[in-house]
Length: 434
Ligand code: CMC
Image (cartoon, rainbow, N blue to C red; front, top):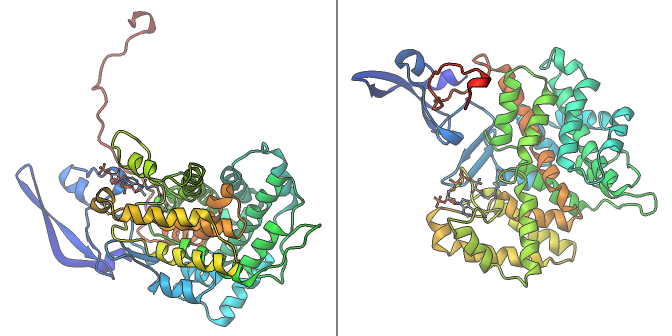
């Protein structure tokens, strides 16, 4: 597919007095790339690009992201349109396929999500053997990996029933996430119900109790839908690249997604949403004095970063942050509640956006700056925030895994390195080592 975008233009590279030409690729939204797939073979050189700041690992038809203008589109649809008009299930379908579903396709996908919502009863016993304070991300990652033992058909012919397997995973991860929470409380598990929507079911499994039935609130469902849509894909970020890289070794979908969940856990990636709230709480407990945090973030000798600020790709603004900030105000108004952390977040944003340090480095609030405040408002505990991110990102991971698996140009992912260790030296027997 990527080969269809090779142009007649050439990029020239001169090394050791010899000039080589490499094709220029221009993507469907104008992204320019130099195709160096034959570089090492032709020149004997490799490229060095720590952190992959300039390296495209694949061609993809799923998501377009343009950092300088804050653009994020899934399969050609803007994130603003999707967040305003769609359910998360429609967007999940869109990511997995080329188009938004027709009504019949949507009904079928919803039916699959309902059909696969239960998890095997043996899996439920797994929850009993994690220590009481186990991290929900560790539990989620282990449980998703274990699914490969319960549903081995995925390992045999993964693309044959991808719709079914994607729905199974999307549905079961939601059930596992809610069970993780219930187990952490020592409360009875709540089973999924066929009469509830994807998000409604999740909220019910999280908050229903035999002594206090939960009433699914449609505004809360709408807010959750929006937030999951905003997280549903973000092209080749750390966790998605992990899913692709692990999957490129032809490991099954569950193991690949489990690896993606582990990558997402990191505080520089999905773990940032939890870290933001912890930072805002710390500021609140210190009488709202955020200046100390701004100063620490600016100090080159302090590793502290203002969590929820900055992004590898967005250098103008994160379009998701804009939508979440608005959703945050709406949810608090609908639930007739207020959150002092939201006031601190807004003040902190204001100060940072007018500070030279942040202006020069193009540091703006990212998606995680406000998402935690929405989660808090709807009752999700802080240690579940990154699990919420995983729920949202799941369709994106599956779509990338599928695309990678289906790619005729597929190769196992295997970066190179520049060795800078000791040169070849003679072996020294242990008794002679000084
Ligand atoms: N606070 C203070 N300074 C920062 C921050 C921050 N949040 N982010 C970047 N910088 C500074 C950094 O110190 C560096 O300064 P200098 O040029 O003086 O050395 C400069 O800005 C460039 O930073 P970088 O580390 O080269 O940027 P990166 O593209 O490698 O990192 C990032 C991107 C998101 C990891 C980083 O901005 C960060 O650590 N942010 C805080 C964590 C966070 O909110 N993560 C969630 C990201 S959005 C959700 C997701 O997609 O996972």
